Image (cartoon, rainbow, N blue to C red; front, side, top):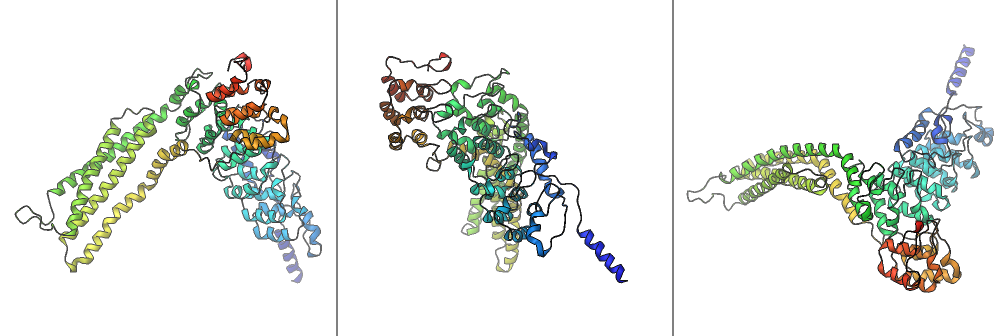
Length: 604
């Protein structure tokens, strides 16, 4: 019997030490798309959100499928050694496994027994336990590790991805909110900026990484980011238009005439930024705002498919416009029937005064407060229902053009629904006032209170059932327009971009520029961006007239003829910006060469 019990206990221990056979790792063969070095850098279709979905999918399944192989049990007598030699199939330590399994308490206890350097240990695929924590989405686990070792957010995997990028890929919102402020973005290289920027845009994580603040911080550390193009020849603003990120697009209003140069870029198919806005997308009003930031010549510019932005927009939205018109007609018809019935009831109530009159035409309850409520609510019900009928009638007789769907139709629908709701409330209030006038005895007080409570029921049901639709309608019609027509305030947008002279030129701060020039007199003629722009190029594009005037006096005549890598002089930037005063200042010093040429010998 004793032997049998010992055998059963041994079998029980063996069952507890369950061995698993496979483990999909962050860098495993199963995720070949993600493990390639150029998955987000040089992939031809990396602007396609479907590619990102394919990259993310293997990571999303990691936690449920992780399988552990225990080489030997941990003994308290040799715990220090065992915590580093307990491996999974692909070289994970105990901390990797606990982080992936979201065992917060276990991680907390284990981290206390580890050295700072132990947290930096990587498995065979170059992933630290902190990477696993970022993928798991458990912020508490990441906090415990970060408090022990502040360098963990900067340690990249074997495929060059930081924990922040992993969290963005998997849409771990809370983890992104935590990792963003503790990740030193100034240590990133230009390619990582672009990659994180595109990843955040495609996965719609801008809300979690402070929207414009995140982009501004990237530009602070790497000013040339606004000029960078991906494999499809899209800048960050083109990407913002494609993904309908209106807050990011609003930042373009604060870079002066530089936007006039960026918006000239075309993709591989000859589409400019306005063509991209014309393509079918979520129901935002972004494409109208894009028209305001592009040069007038681009409005009728045709792509390689011989389509203007307006033609492309009409073609892409043809089906949506038809469906929207049918939906609008149906809604207006149904609501108009209800508004008409309410108007009839409210109009009839005027001639059937509760309590009647005393033979002289004067209502018996004329001096009663409830009679006053009855009259006012009935009058408001008539006016509001009539307004509602007129709004819905104008919707039914609309031409349903593309322009009508921008503000006209949504505004009419909002006013009509609001008027209809007001008429419903007033009709119910009219009924309640009538009931209180008829049953005005004290012994009938309970009945009156019950009726008043029941009168609130239909109004409450109407609000609950239509609240979300109303909010969505108001938001889609007004919110985007408010963001675009009133871009981020000048005081809130941080415009410190890169080197001192770059910042000074962009902001028109001549005092700061003089400080930089006093340290190096030749810095005014040195290229300060990868595009080969000098300080004068930047100031011209930013329309900083006073700054340009001071800088031109400091420069020689030949300095004004310096060109960037695209062959454009600063005078070309002035021509694009449309600032006549800046052009006059520069021409005054180059009278012998009034025309400064850009690339391909095109006069500015």
